[in-house]
Image 1: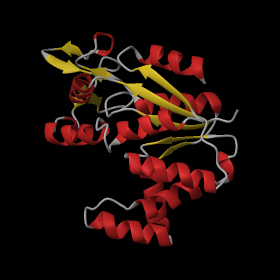
Image 2: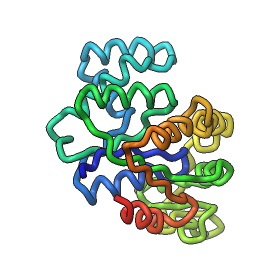
Image 3: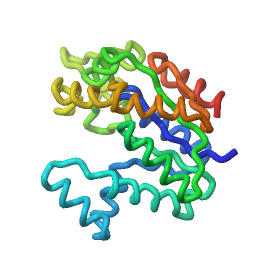
Length: 226
């Protein structure tokens, strides 16, 4: 069985981290929807020009531009042994259209990974993140014992290197977090509705894992099923 994978999880669920781990393990490209946009816009492609017109206005790029971009990316030679698509689809409608386009392009979808996390916990995780100024990959989080920053001379510093910590402005913007989570947790038309569509449509193995446990445990649960 191939390893063509969609990965879902709310902001704060560690979806990007798990995607990167799966990518390394199977040596398949980790395709993030935002990066595809940047590639097309930077490369000045026809689709890129169309997408840019919407982005510049602050509008969402319509599916009839987004999905052909995705399909074109998944047909590149580096995807022949599998791929992980992250950050798409975001709605039930996109899921239905993507599934149809994959089928038309002769591309199978083998797995859907869903990281399940309570909305309040997801929000706490986002707001508790602290970024080390020396290295973004030094995990520091005020809500997790295992990766709590340390105190030095009355100041909270990076637990790995003692560097200064900063917060991302959008991590502290509750309205923005609620808006993103509002789309994700919407079971009628949003991202959860997309996940449920794949569960009901059949023909694809859906792996739902508890996102509230440690990163290592989440990885273990996913790898057992893949």
